[in-house]
Amino acid sequence: MSKVIITIAPTGAWPTKKDNPAIPFTPKEIAEDVFECYQAGAAVAHLHMRDDNGQGTMNLEKFKETTALIREKCDIVLNLTTSGDLNATDDTRIAHLRELRPELASYDCGTMNWNHNSVFYNTPAFLEKLGKSMLDNGVKPEVEIFDAGMVYTSLYYRKLGILAAPIHYQFVLGVPGGIGATVENLVFLRNLIPPDSTWSALGVGKGHMPIFLAALALGGHVRIGMEDNIFIDKGVLAKSNAQFVKRAVRIIKETNGTPATSDEARTILNLNKS
Ligand code: ZN
Image 1 (cartoon, protein in one colour):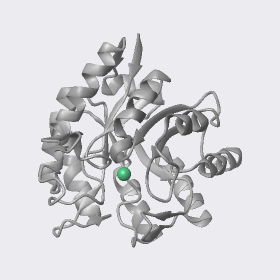
Image 2 (cartoon, rainbow, N blue to C red; image 1 turned 135 degrees about the horizontal axis):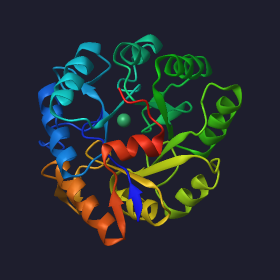
Image 3 (cartoon, rainbow, N blue to C red; image 1 turned 30 degrees about the vertical axis):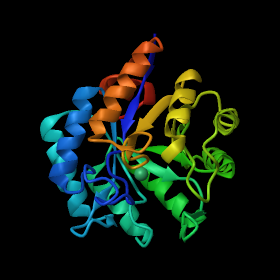
Image 4 (cartoon, protein in one colour; image 1 turned 60 degrees about the horizontal axis):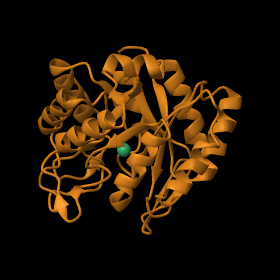
């Protein structure tokens, strides 16, 4: 039976309470939400922070408070974003990794236009600095791939030793400015990565379920949650992130898989337990 890692991405930087009032924003809300998802079967939590006005922020204190509250409740694998605010400086995007040394953090493998209204900067200088800082602090990169060129960029940094093999990839499909959320694109991307890699995938918005099901069928891991999708069904807002986790667990079991525990995820991803 294959073990499937469920990553919950409860918040993100973009959706607002107007989009879905159930999105957790404060450290306390995020910690409670993550614990509920952990109890339902999530093994990894991919975390973004919001400031007191609900905007995405890389504020170190918010990361500290939230991760401490989560650690009081459970041992879920923590995966902290390095891209929680498009205006953050390179140093601000790295500071929390040095301080908190999470087991995983996102590594966005290239610059792209974002949502047809802004630019998501991940310059060569930043990617080198981020990769080295992750190596120094024992943080495993989750290499987020928004388009095919980013896979080739990851192979370049792997060759330089800035990304250590085996690489763990997160394919993010359907972001405006990136590759579309189709099964063909997922198969194409999966075929580009080195065979020793591990990988997970998500589709944004209406691409959510097709990519979830295709990732399972291809033997990948999955990411779910309101960072990527606020609807549990067509036109029906999710009531909680745990609702997504419960559905994922049910489908994984029905397709002869088993949701991985957090410790099993650590083994699969070769993590240093924090
Ligand atoms: Zn994220």
